[in-house]
Length: 130
Image (cartoon, rainbow, N blue to C red; front, side, top):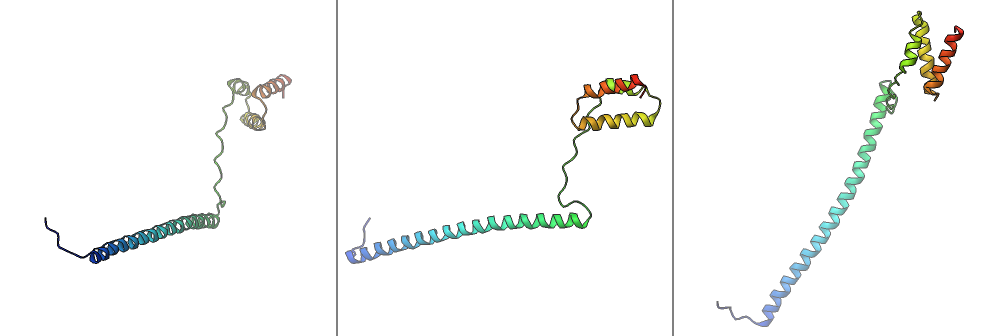
């Protein structure tokens, strides 16, 4: 292949032009990188503001519908009453009395008393004739 004859000055000008183009592209890429970082930061701030606005609107909507601002945690499932206590309570003929004994037993259990203590007291009350 034959190369055209050019002067060293023209070759230096062409190499300088290529180098300036590289520097300009490098500067543009750095600027684009800064813009991307800025936009990413703005997006993060915007997402946080959006989440806060949605939460505030949800609270207002719930309050306007007569609900609590924040949903309550669901109640724990009711504990099963031991078979021994059920057998003891079924011996009573009065439905209202049985219901009341169950309610008292469950409320005592909710306060932290053991089933054994509740059953022992129920047996004691049964022996005394309530």
